[in-house]
Image (cartoon, rainbow, N blue to C red; front, top):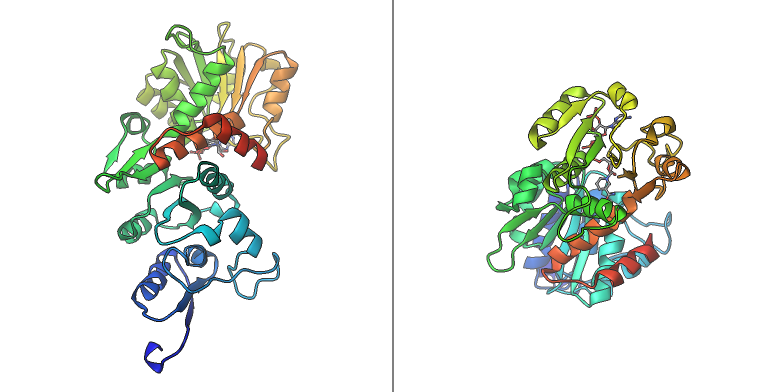
Length: 367
Ligand code: NAP
C-alpha cells in the first residue's frame, strides 16, 4: 500500500484475541507513511486507545453510545474525558487492568484522573484477557509499565512476576504488577491486604503506640477466596486470631492451615458467640448489586461483634452494614478498602509518594 504512493494508509482488521493487536502495533511501527491501523471488536479496543502511543495517524470515536460506525468504537467523550487521548504521545507510560470483565471497571476512570491530578504522563486502559500467560508473554516486549490484576488472575500473575513482595507471596496473590524502572523486572504486590486491614484498624480507633487494635482479637472471616486470604493474613500479621467460615469447608480448612487460624462451617458460624471485641469480615460477593437484599449473616447473630466489615463496595452500604449499624455496631465499608487499595496501587505505579487526601477526593467525585 505504501508503494502505491498513498498519502494515508488505512488497515483495519478484527481482533479475536487481545494478542492480535500486537500485529496492528507492528504495522504502525514499520510504516513510513501516515497510517491508520486498528482492530475492531471488544478485544481490539486497546488498538484504538493506544493509537497516539504507537504513532497512528488517527483513531475513530462515535458521536454517542449506540451510534458506532464499527464494532468496539469508543465514544469521543470517552476518548477525550476518560483516556485524554489528545495528551497521549510516544513517551506516555502505559498501565491497565487485566481481567475477564474489565468492560465495567471503574479503574480506567480513576487512574487516568489520578494521572491528570498529579500531572503524570500515563495512560490506563482495560486489557480484556482470556489467557493471562499468553497475554503477559506477548506484551512483554512493549514495555508497558504497570497492571492492576483482577479476577481470576491474581494467582497466575504471581507466577509470572520476576519478583514478588514478601507479603504478597505469603498471601499467594498479587493485585498489582509494576515494571521496575531500573532493570525492567516485573514486581508483584498485594495492596488489598493493607487496604482492608488498615481500614478495619482505623474503624477500631487506629494503631496506638505501634500496637494494632486487632492484637489478640478474634477476626471471623466469611469466605476463603482472594479477599479472604488477604484479610486473614493481614489480621494474623497484626496478632489477631483468624477464624475462617466458608461455604466449601475444605477451602476454609486450607486457608486456616495456611494462615495459622481455625476453620468452621457456615452453620457453626451462625451459632458462634464470639468473645467481646471480635471483628466480622464478609469477603463473599453476597449483598453485591444487583442482589442488595441478600446478607451473609442473619441480623440476630451480628450483635456479638464490635465491628463489621464488608468487602462488597457496590452498594457502598450493604444490607449487612445497614443491619450492623442498626444494632449500634461500628461498620467499615468495602468502599473504604477500594479507595485505599487504588491509591496505594497508584503510588506503586508512579514509584513515588502521592497526595493521598487529594486522590481520595478525586475518587469520591468520580464514584
Ligand atoms: P473469590 O476468590 O471468587 O472468592 C469468593 C468467596 O465467596 C469464596 O470463598 C466463595 O465460596 C464465597 N461465595 C461466593 N458466592 C457465595 C454464596 N452465594 N454463598 C456463600 N459463599 C459464597 O473472590 P474474591 O476475589 O475473594 O472477591 C470477593 C468479593 O470481594 C467480590 O465481590 C469482589 O468484588 C470483592 N473485592 C472487593 C475489594 C475492595 O477493594 N473492596 C477488593 C477485592 C475484592 P466457595 O469457596 O465455597 O466457592
